[in-house]
Image 1 (cartoon, one colour):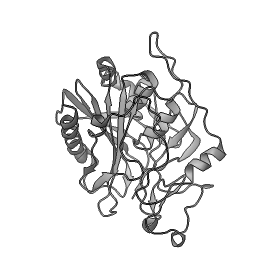
Image 2 (cartoon, rainbow, N blue to C red; image 1 turned 180 degrees about the vertical axis):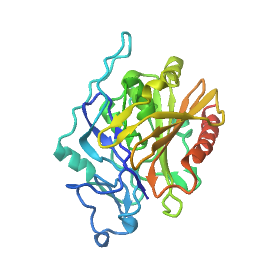
Image 3 (spheres, rainbow, N blue to C red; image 1 turned 135 degrees about the vertical axis):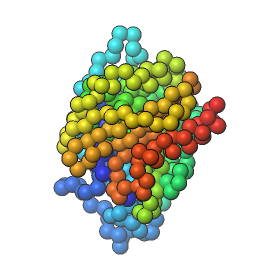
Length: 327
């Protein structure tokens, strides 16, 4: 399975950002994966273009790519904090090409997680971790990027990388208020609410059978009620009708109806132009205690079931799991 170019801006305030990308075709100048014959069965290769490639499936079985481009996609313009907004942590400079190469060249044994440490400073939160899905149909929690909880405050760059390995975002961007739709609500939490009392749980589930492919990310966010209300505010979504991205064309945030869950639930597509008519299908479930977000990226081959049909089914299962853990 491969995910069709779906890049994630890891830090909205970094002008030349790292991107966690989903790609299907290797680009010029990228490092090739080791030949299948030299790889022991069960090896997982992590490189620029195919983050997770099992030795027995090299060239076919990829999950989310780690870095599709370094400084290849311009991130949204830096946004100055509003008066009275939480103080932001100083961001880490972008890694140099040599440092990036080190990040992209892991060869891991099957089941071994990617060695990116959890940057959270909030301590353990087993209840929130247990709120994440571990299985849905043919999709199972990733061995290399298992579910994790980041307790804030945390260095924004490190947290963006750690969470971005689990949550896939679109390659499009627009006004700053659109970031929670295009990149994910967790990015806004890191940008505007990086303080004690906020938590972000994230995981990625993927199917390993090419015959029935499915990849999606889930995040569960807890924190102050005002923060949850701000994240779930869908007003001014009409400002997100003219999105664009480097080498990704144009698109828009297009709401569509889903069955009600929690206090309120809503869903939207991130549409595209050209060869990718839809970059992502996203559903958000709001409750007084947490927000839940499911993101299904465009991928090839496509899942057997239309992602727009799959999305509310996944959200229902994720909501039931979260309620059992946090209700």
